[in-house]
Length: 381
Ligand SMILES: [Zn+2]
Ligand SMILES: [Zn+2]
Image: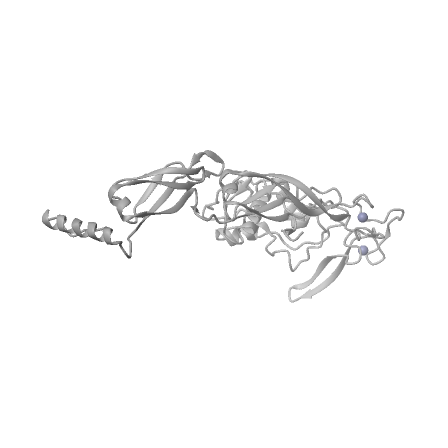
C-alpha cells in the first residue's frame, strides 16, 4: 500500500491544560507568554509544511509540563521514561529536540531553565516496557463535491498489528529467554568517559539485548518485533467543508503498540480534485459566466452550476463587464459548523463580437446615430 508510511515514533497528545507556572524552574524573570494549547478537534486544517511535527511536539511538551508526575519522570529518565522506550540517555546527549523544554525554548524564545543534569544509574529502567505504536499516514483523494458536503469512505489501511504466531511477544514459540551475556542481564553498559572536567560515567543501553537483559530467540514470522504488517478496512467519515491539505486523525488506528503499549493514530491527508467550472477559496465558491453585450445591456437569466446543482441567476440590465454577482449561502459549509455556509461569487464576463452580421451592424449603427442625436456620450460597454 503506497499511501501509507510511518509518521513518527509515537506520542500521546491531549494538551488540554496550560503548564502550571509553578512547575517551572525558579529563575524566570519575564512572565512567559504561552501560546494557546492546540485545539482538540478531530481535524485541523493547518497546511503549513512541518506543522504536523511542530504541533505534536508542542502537544507533548504541554502534556509533560502540565502533569507534575510526568515531569518528575521526565526529569529522572528523559523522554524514554515517559514513552516506555529503552533507557540509554547518556551524559553528553539528551538535550536534542526530543527534550520538551528545549522545544519550548525553540518556539517561544527561551526562559526555561535547564537543570536536567546528566543521567546515569537507571538500574535497568526501560526493560520490557510497553511502547506506543507508530502513527500511520494515509493519502485520500476525494471529489470536489465530496469535500464540500462530506462523504463516507472505506479506506484500506496497512499498518502493524500484533503477530499472531508469537502473540505479540516477539519470541519464538517454544523457546525461553536466557540472560544476556554482554551485559550480564543488566540491560545496559557503563563506561567511563574522560573529559576536561573530570571522569564521567556513561550509561548505554546494551546493544545486544536492546536493554532487556535477556536474549530471546526471535519469532520467525515477525523477526522479534511482535508485530506484522496487515491491511484493515476502516470506515471513514469525512466531514463537510474539508479542503486540500486537511488532515483527519483517527485515534488508535495507527500501528499496534509493542508489549501491550497503546496503538498509534492514523492521519488521513485529504487531497481534493479540481472542478471543471467551480473554484474554491476557503468557504467561498467562484465561477465565471459569459454573457453577450446585448444581455449585459438588457438583462438576462443564466444557468449557473453551484454546489447545490444548476441555479438560475438573474443578470440585471446594465451589468458591467467584470461585475461579481453574489449567490448568498451557495458556498461551502464551514468545517465543524455545517449550518454556516459561504457564498458563491459569479464573475460576469461580457462578450463583444469581433464580427457582426450585416443586420446587426446596421442596428448598431442606428443605435450610434440615435445616441449622437440624444447627445449621449459614446456607446460604452
Ligand atoms: Zn511474532
Ligand atoms: Zn544485554
